[in-house]
Length: 330
Image (tube, rainbow, N blue to C red):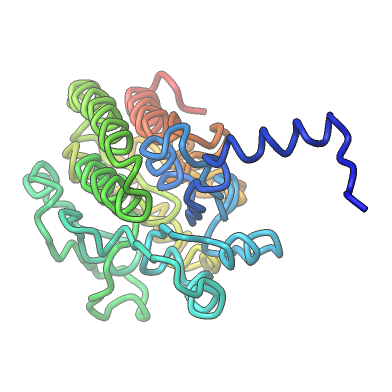
């Protein structure tokens, strides 16, 4: 007996057969919000990348959720930062992603890296700070007050390379090539999206160079050493960080050293991060005259998507300018 299909159901089946694009779209997973923003800009309307670590959480303390594991298991391509930022992800990539392409930011052609600075106290070479952010440099610096465990030379790569706009541009072009390789029918669209994203990054970069030039020589402290690429691009003057390991609070000796550093070097501002408890910063600056403001390398509070990365750069610049000029500190 022939099977009867209701008209409405038959029409729905016809629609599904006529619209394969959604089913054929590449399944894309990205580890952190700044890279998710860049990949989203390239993907455009063709794909909606899955973000693993929300911008308000730190990848240093993150654990995968079941939904992330499912997304990785189905992925055609996974974009990650690489290095210390993605340590939480490495074992899962081996066991969950199957035949998926894995593209690491730090391994991208054209992305230039810097060695991580050792410890939380740095000598600042302002001339080096003004050099091209693509010079691979040993930026480690030690002084007599540095804690013993921080005195060894550090050869680990600083993973926060997305904060150099030119590195982000290299990654955008690489993302377009990777997506075109797995989805060749839409290659032209990916490349056009990449060109538009690059123009926007270049516009923000030019504006930041002008904005930050007047405060480039004013010393400041950060919560953890996440901003070296941004600092070198714009010739800024960081002199240290509150913590060496974001997962470990500073001890009494470090707090005392930080207060001494603020007074000895005329530190104008101490920058905290939204992913971590800021109360300790108020203890450090109390009575010193230094201001407190917020820097965030991940984009907490910004909506995920193509706009997050340029807005992240702009927000970093405005926070630095505001606190270092005394017009935005607390």
